[in-house]
Amino acid sequence: MEQELTKKTNILEGSSPVSLDQLPQQDYNILNLGPTHPATHGIFQNVLKMDGEKIIDAEPTIGYIHRAFEKIAENRPFYQVTTLTDRLNYCSSPINNMGWHMTVEKLLGVKTTKKVDYMRVIIMELARISDHLICNSVLGVDTGALTGFTYVFQLREKIYDIYEEVCGARLTTNIGRIGGMERDFTPKFWQKLKEFLDEFPKIFNEFDSLLTRNRIFFDRTKNVGGISAERALNYGFTGPNLRATGVDYDVRAMNPYSSYQDFEFEVPVGETGDCYDRFLVRNEEIRQSIKIIEQAMKNMPEGRHFVDVPEFYLPPKQDVYTKMEALIWHFKIVMGEVDVPVGEVYHSVEGGNGELGYYLVSDGGRQAYRLHFRRPCFIFYQAYPELIKGSMLSDAILTMSSLNVIAGELDA
Amino acid sequence: MQNITNTLEINHSYILERIRERIGINLLEFDHPYDILTITINKECIIDLLLFLRDDEILKFDFLTDICGIHYPNNKHREIGVIYHLHSLINNIRLRIKTFASSEDPTFLTASLIYASANWMERETYDFYGAIFQGHKDLRRILNMDEMNYFPMRKEYPLQDGTRTDKEDKYFGR
Image (cartoon, rainbow over all chains, first blue to last red):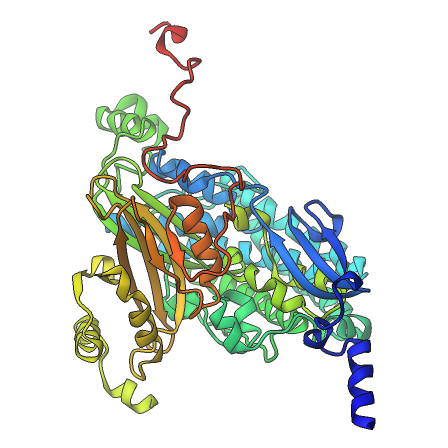
């Protein structure tokens, strides 16, 4: 009798989402979260089935900002595809750009020099820092702590100033070229980078101390949106979200590209895969990225900032006006009249939120025959209903921001 | 188990041999472009192969990296392709599997019962190429709108509307 009673009260309190399904349908509310909602940081729609404030089921709808990148990429010369990759994960577009350049270089069989690799590593790690900074500080905002966000957003501005020094753009960077970087780092770049590295630890530690041991933040994020390592692998999680569950898979360490094997860094892992662990993993990755940048600065090799791929790397402008060969290459590149070798290549880089892969099939024409982006968000976002089932609405908001889902990457 | 994997060198020929030896699947083609072993199999065998690769104690291809479609309009009866990228995280080796079907009957078997991640990947492939995954619980369009009545990534659909007239040469004095 007593057992039966506790069972009943459990159902009423809704301790487990399974038993709640036995309640009649009319007791549920349907809530449209999104497509545009200030708390979801992008165009995400979720139709939530709710019992009071508890989520019973969620149905995500995606594709609101689908821009057919894969179709467009089949109709453009390679160098024009870079601008499409900018708009995937726009919080860390330099990583996407570099990943694309490296994919094409792999197809062409071009070996970049250490100088190019190290330059790229600096830019990519800066991008990773800015990506993680946004994600972690916005997680703070969603728990009601706006201060940390205002601290680190300055730092992101500084990083964007550094991009500006290299490529002239801030958000959609189009940084680097196939075969190297567009120009060597200027003295002003080095000065800005040094300033950034000097002031970073102080501000970042302050941010860290505001949130990491904050009781309210801890209570809001601990045991929220957790997933086991086994489920995470089954769902195709990669990046910080996978590492938070305790699996130390990092493309940089496992399949080093762009000379990552020269650098010493640790791959932080969590345990429970909940929002708090994801936060901690990202914070530690930021520190590791700083370490990598410092090593790259210290060991920056001498040499040219590009390698010899005249059919893809634009010649210097003064040569175009004075030398026949440079003029021909310039024309051929800009008009997209360069044939590429036949082949199929898969290249992946560790993007801001996971393994960003490029699967490129070339039939020897001037454009890609097929280009597929393996977008980490798209793959792990399908676990979202499972992550939020049985939790409160406010936890669902937190879970989404701690997954670091970027609408541009999700919808391609 | 760790010892076995460490003492054996797992290379491409070893994987091919093990697949042939253990489950006797007919490998139509194999190649290794840019260091990724690529095998082509009959579309009916895909589930057997994925299960074998996942559960094999040495190969352990237990991570589905990606599924994507491809369209070769000139390959008669093998127009629509579905390409799987697998990753053995323990051995750190990648594998690419290709299957093909005709565009009249583009049916494939679903991998979503083995890998939860295959769910949306297959929906995306259906959305773009019209590949139908039998056994998939919720095969709907995912990125394009539901009302769309064609599969836009197929090669017969050009990027630009063929009826457009505003880009004709005469408007540019050519």
